[in-house]
Image (tube, rainbow, N blue to C red; front, top):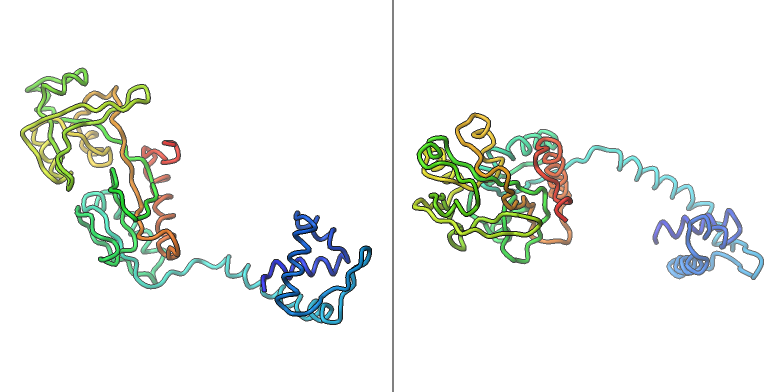
Length: 306
């Protein structure tokens, strides 16, 4: 039996009117009548004697109202108490993320979540490899950039702002590029991905994406490796802002072409399935959304990208 049907029946009995109860519930009379019929069919009893002008409880209806109404009130009171209780999470929550992003950005968020939910075990796998969530038994992955098409479900947590940068020593040796065309004359540090080498950098001009071919003599499959190469003066690099923010503030790296907008990527929470998402996974995703919104104000809300 659905409790909303019993609530509606109770109001019909108290008001002695189906139409008044329907109006109070902001539903049509036909819907109210259908829900009353559904309740009677479920209980296999007639609850009202109905005429065109009068509505009277049957003996079974009166018994249900007298004995059931207090029980429903107790049940609703219990629900209210449960909703005001702190969320208690149990078991193990298995997470994967990249090592650098995990250490630099997510470690504080994970620690705060673990302190809040002491009955829950966080099992964190930090790796630059995209582990198979289903075969590895992983509940949640945090991933950055273009996602491969798959059956996995991805929820954007934040846009991931990107910039170009280089070391002062590189700029002193080669000069600073002034336009996108100047990039072709510079050594660009290239990152390798499972699908191949990234040989174009994307920029946004007047809401259009422009792909600029880049080349260089240093290629590596690690974002941190790209950063270290830039710090060593090997060329110009394309980075997530969070990755080089401290280097920019200290002057170890200098932003290149600051007036131009490098196309942002995104940060995603990735889960194996859309249906029956565990409460512990939902709680961590909500925690991360709040974490990015309040602790990293220079991250752009994913809603602004739509």
